[in-house]
Image (cartoon, rainbow, N blue to C red; front, side, top):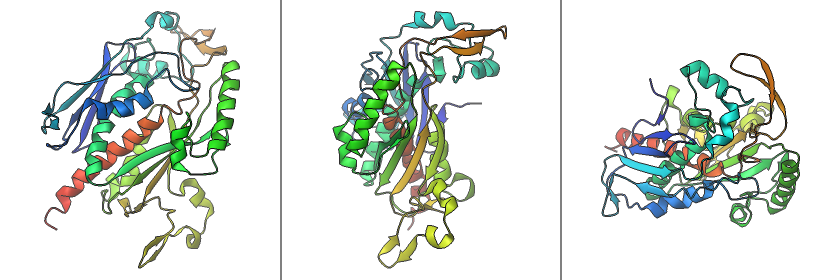
Length: 353
């Protein structure tokens, strides 16, 4: 049994714990000859790195990646690519008071029920630090997708109830929340400062857009591309919902409104989010994810200890106010990994045509 490996052809296994020696990933199934360097991967890791941005934890990690295998003279060899990111700023003693207490909203109680043992230091394997390995692997997937002309980008479209009304994607690079609506981004930053003073946290919505995706990716029935994307994104700890295209809004539409009319020039609209019958249509793939508030808050909460006795705690430690925007490169990585896997799978289906 395993729960740390993703993909069927382009396969990724992540490993490591928040307060262990290191975190990382092994990428297997990457074709040979792909130009790759640590700098390619570092660009995405720097966006996920803690200690930056208005909503981020003060934990300081350089998150420098080391490529341990799978490269020769700057190109992939077709053999497993091992990626390592060493932990340098773990303060494990900050969690000593939580050895026998279950934190509300965390996986403490469920990990103990499953394994009979848990790493209380920052959540161990359940920590968001695990996602550094995903981002590193996703950067490799991006290099593969670039060969096919596919790009993946994401941005904050809602935070704490404040919604972006514009999708000016270049503006994501001009504000720390990576929001395509600068006016909304300013109000989001003000709300973050307020909530930080209150000892609380915020959730929000991230939108991911994949452009240049060729038609035909995805498998019938159980490996539909939209199902695979939903599975990939729901595997991120803070994600509690996924919608594609019109998503839940489609439930309020009539068929005549929801259908994307097809003309000789192409589709007129994209309520389908670039996927029909589980297979990519050639349009942009549009996905949104609901991100829950960070469960580690400075306010006193009720919980129980190992003896099932009621106790009250303040989590303390160093935590984000919101998983956004650091979760954005993680979302991009999971979409890139899914598309890379299905791109290679499609190559085996149509190799004679």
